[in-house]
Length: 229
Image 1 (cartoon, rainbow, N blue to C red):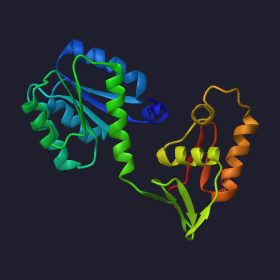
Image 2 (image 1 turned 90 degrees about the horizontal axis):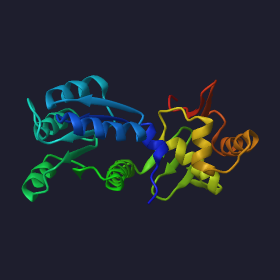
Image 3 (image 1 turned 30 degrees about the horizontal axis):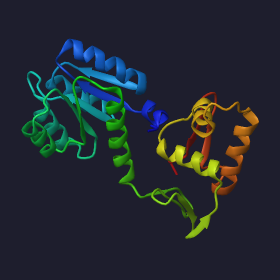
């Protein structure tokens, strides 16, 4: 199973765990796949970090001092109903998982950590949250249907080639972030040897169809969608 690791790298994770050994092990794994990691040793500290840093995803143990994982989830849900929350727990009994499910979690990972299950859980949670949104609206009557992967301008379909569509979807999935040349090449071409002119040609073809001002060039960094208009 393939995972959108570029998208993972653009996300921040708040991880709450009171066990020093487990916290160190899981943190090491999180740092490999995610862009920024915030660490908390108990639920109280986790909630303060949540309010201050506004992470993209929560990963929390259940049994913690001061505020346990279930109480932490309840407090977070009072502030934010949509942030993905995953629990990490050694409890495999149905009662504990049922209580967690009733606290509006999005997934769970059982200890000890198994890498494929870890990645699959995060991937499913992220995809489910992304799929809730059906349309991405640009300006000037330009709309992208995220379910059918079709681009419309004033209700007419704009035909895109496969790489053009892949590139546009990459920008949409990372609409608030700047994408580097390396990230785009890895996502579109994988490990193929690609020249700068090939990337430039692809960008120009897409820009000619959606508007040259929609994809901004950020000097020295890369490109991003113009979502300010």
